[in-house]
Length: 256
Image (cartoon, rainbow, N blue to C red; front, side, top):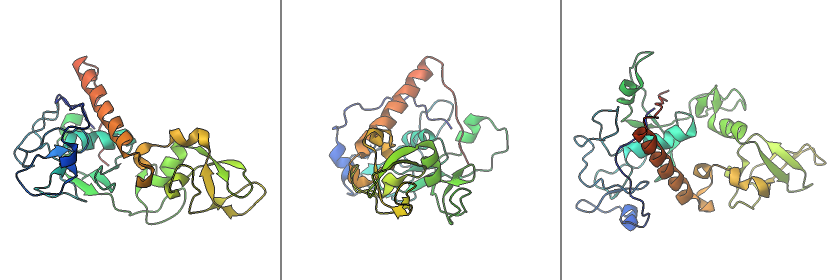
């Protein structure tokens, strides 16, 4: 999937950011909640996204979870493509409400050029739980790749150490237990089998040295890491822009 853009992004997070939080009607400034670019003149049908190799695409993402045509909070398509591409799967989170979203599958044939396939990546849809995970065997789950669900995929790729709240055993758990913690230091609200003295299901805390390894986009809202996540997205877009200028761009297609 392509996520490179020639449009320069605003670098001042304070620029009109308050207006992006309002849900007011028409006439106001509409900015992207991620890169702060001005989307005021975009009607989601006629205005174009200047991403090279993508051709003429609408700039404003039509978010299936919280899109309002005249709202002042919005997200541009380049940022949504970047968010989804950064996960390494075909699913990402809406930066406004954190719902799981994905680009709608198109009718492209196998082997189609990435730039042509990316033309289809303008329509977003909610990622709906629909299958059984081959690892945890739970259903319905959002299946992301390799037949496993998003939670198991995160756990496999982020094998963190956790401390049992009862026997204090340090154990690697292949599941995102941080999702069930109010803060980075609080205990989980769900249990996992302790292989130490307990030999039963207990609650856990993240080992302090591993907290920073947790993807900021997947931490609970109460952790206050949303801005860190969005800063990472802005940095990735800027990195891609510089690669494009040097002619080092690699295109990625992640339509499921």
